[in-house]
Amino acid sequence: MRKQAPSAKSSEYEKLGSRQRPRPSVAATSSVPLRSRRFLLVAGSGLLFGFLVYRQTYKKRVSEDLAPQDFDFSSRFDATASQFDEDVDLVEWLYGITKLRRKLVQQAHGNVLEAAVGTGRNSEFYNLQRITSLTLQDQSEEMLDVAKAKWRETHPDYEHCRFIHGSALDTLPPPTRGETATSGKAGYDTIIATMSLCSTPGPSLFLRSIAGHLSLRDTNVQANSGDQLPARILLLEHGRSYFSWLNSLLDKAAPAHAQQHGCWWNRDIGKIAEDSGLEVISTKRKHFGTTWSLELGLPAEAKGVKRQQWLEDTRQKVAVLQSEVDQAHVEFRERMRKQNEARRKEEELEAWRREQREKMKQKES
Image 1 (spheres, rainbow, N blue to C red):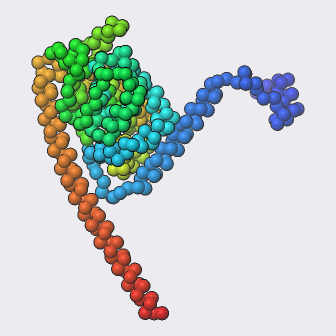
Image 2 (cartoon, rainbow, N blue to C red):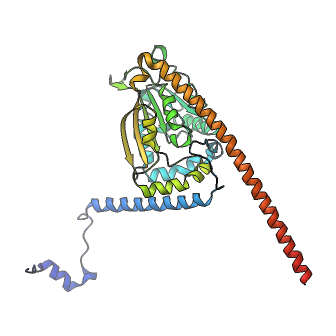
Image 3 (cartoon, rainbow, N blue to C red):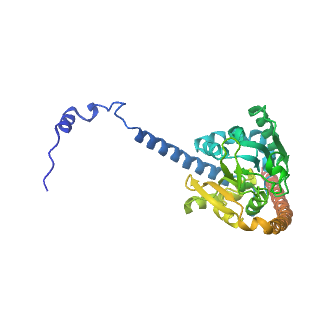
């Protein structure tokens, strides 16, 4: 094979030496490599951050016998409400979660329910021209207080927003305005839930419960545009990845992370949606598959003559779940009591041993 003759340009570079080669101008530099470098930087930083979080969380295990997946650690949010936004603001911005929140919430229309609103991290993104009324619900009173203050600061002139302290597994009041509030098909046109399935026991039942508050109308006529918009549940969640190695890391750290932060970050969001029995209209995933965006609708059996039976079946399952959660709390507290008692006895024994060693040293001296 013949060797290709070097070009005059490359020969000139060889004469100049590699250190003296002319640099490409800024105008000649493509923006694609810059975007690629930025992606690699963000991805690498994300992996490093994830690994450090995993190590830190795993080191802080409170006990060797931690709670099961459906254990309710939502009370952790009461203690972290005041600093929650500060803790997650930078991470969500770096990962593009803030942008995903905006995109999801701006789809809301009609009478809107945001379940498990937390500190109101979606408040600034609502397009109030598309909304008839807004109901914000959360189980943590401390979180809800932060959400109230944030809403009043962001939308001081909007009068049709109310706040409900309670569980989304309970029966919630219907909307107070618009056609759906006065018709036989009363319900919410849009239900929003973001980063909520990780912190609730029985996440599939959580979805069934909030779905029971959807409007029975197939579409809602948007007053401003005349568009026919369907009643939907819109979700933004985090959970299991496409990759087994990442799922393994999440699984190992999940119990300690939940016990400390109230969040089970290794749940299979796709399976949760499937097990809920709702219609999965669309699913999109990012960040190695750990960030999920879903659109859900009511199944056929939740409409028409079968609706009451579907709702009653959901209520019965919620009652069974609550009983199981209460029992799990009793059993877990008893395990922790026994572990703490055993740890106390071990510490007393070790203190006695140290005392005996000191006495032996004093006798020898």
